[in-house]
Length: 439
Image 1 (spheres, rainbow, N blue to C red):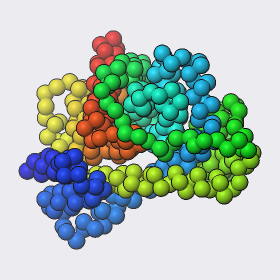
Image 2: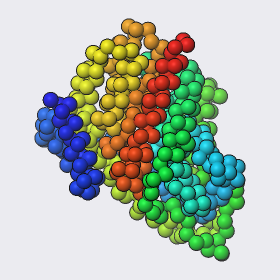
Image 3: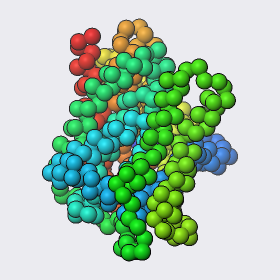
Image 4: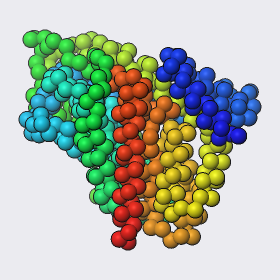
């Protein structure tokens, strides 16, 4: 009965947003309350669940998204994004620019959390879109496919890293197998798939559009542009690599590295430095830079609310115990453990939206079966990671980030983003099964 309630609530959510045109945040809030009541959660607990759901997802994303938007807006309006776009186009050529964006997304996505990578790279996507009059979906989806794959498949991202620990897998071998599985998945879901999306016409996007440049203000050079835009990437790489290169550091140094390696702190440091390199150094006043930051925040307010709404729905699903009920039901299916793990993660992902929740919930169910069957634990990590990316839709924060940033309809977001995620997931499973044949 509870699974039927979840299915009906998802249908209601889609109908409210796409057919009745109800604001997505209000739709999430209303449907979450209805789902909570229908699933037997005491009504007096629902307000606290709503607060917990918002806090659980926004606590880690708010600063990252806000600071990322500020940095992106400054990179765009300073002319740095256009400079970077010109270098990329000159390197790969317009004909192969999709491949250049895909490679950039993959390299940046390995050390970066998905949310940071998204808000950091979106300005680069639109700088190329504006300058060369190309489709934002055509240019952006290959890059975001690469980010998604690294998030789901490759340590040290939170979900695969946690799965490595749960299954007692080998981090290095998981990374090697993950790279072998990830590359063909990205190619299929990125440059090849986007060739079928020529009919999608995104609406106008002005957040990262460069305004006319004041002749009295300098335009940053190539090094300054790349340095300022990609500084968060290198800061995270440096802070992550230092403990491995210097394992005997004292506790105080490790504490500082942990502090400096926090994504929000990294973004704050990047903002402070960019304020000088792309602002003051280029003869912009502090007030002018702050106006750019304020303008950026205005555009992302609704995105933050929509993500908060998805967090409420996810929390209701967790509190009601539907995740565990669904997983226990699927555990009885007579299929190969790698396929079963992928299937459990995929269905939970479809119900709750969170890839991390889907993977970790599925891990708890499949772990006993995996140990009995003797399946390679490194491949099980990748199987669950692939399943957790399956068909992102209206209950996933990533779905709404893509829709709102790219100004698409729900229908076109399903046709582009959701199908891309499904291709990545299925291709990932096929790659895992292929490797398993040779082990």
